[in-house]
Image (cartoon, rainbow, N blue to C red):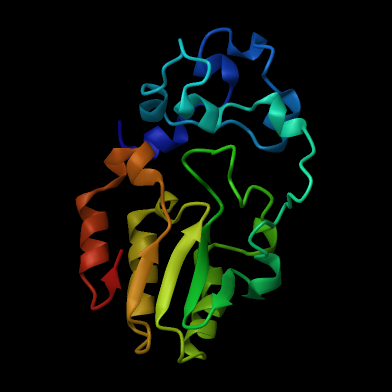
Amino acid sequence: MSWQNALRNSINTPEALAAGMSQRSDFSEQAQRQFPLRVPGAFRDLIDFDNPGDPLLRQVYPHRQEELPAPGFSDDPLDERSRETTPGILHKYHGRVLLIVSPACAVHCRYCFRRHFPYEDNATGRSNHRAALDYIRDNPDISEVILSGGDPLAIADHHLQELVEALADIPHVRRLRLHTRLPVVIPDRVTDALLDTLTATRLSSA
């Protein structure tokens, strides 16, 4: 199965995750509605379903504990909404920006700090990257760009290549980083085309 099909066919119901899991007393319909379960098959195969406390299971399973109020908790724990300078850009630290590339993830981790992020206000399509790239060009102190989301590797290789090449054309950008879980949960995402894209420019990447 290609990585695209693995992503497309990710498990999104507790019934598909494991037989009878929707009947467990700790399952939360409310948590599932607010942040739907999503698990790639390769990740599911690593879960020990005989162990209710298996850490991989707890990472993705909508649990009733999510319904409990937690004093001091926030829907925006990193205060990212106040750092939105241009749609798709979060500028929190000097010399570094985060570029929202995709709203999609291969796996929905229950602890996700961006589960309430307003992706609808941070358009991530190819045509909408122009404003974000202009912002980076207009700020010569920016030397590092972090591709994030969602997951930046959820987009096609050719789209990623266009974006990386556009960033490499900005003289003051020297370093490119990717915030991604895809190589962990769908290892086949690491294609020759991806490696070529990340090594073909002058940018150092991590």
